[in-house]
Image (cartoon, rainbow, N blue to C red; front, side, top):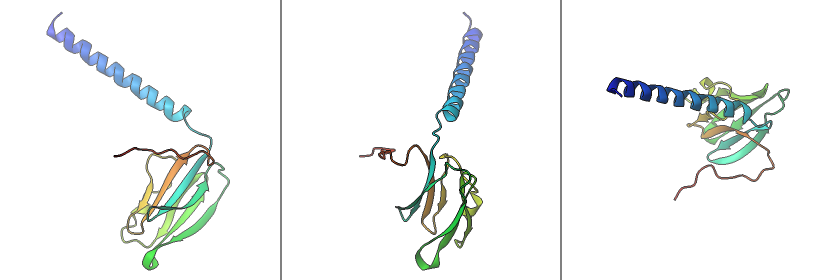
Length: 133
């Protein structure tokens, strides 16, 4: 077998592996979803509120207040959650937009706020995401 054929076979094998892995990831994203989705809101590392996002008809707007007059106005609408108003200097939390999946949390570092999406039952025992030494 010539060198060119070996390179061609290797390239084809890598492309097939990438295609299969991509299809598997997409199937896991769509079929591995839980029917129950909720948002956890943390301030200064402490869980302050859990909101059920499973019902797309639930609409709510509330404010989370912090130190020295800091605040974030949070909106729950159509199964998603977003920060619609804040008094932090960079307003990145507002520009992150609405989230519905756990791919990326909303964070406001100046106001020490983190909003994470979780899937599963609220009554399930919480398992650690990562073990460290």
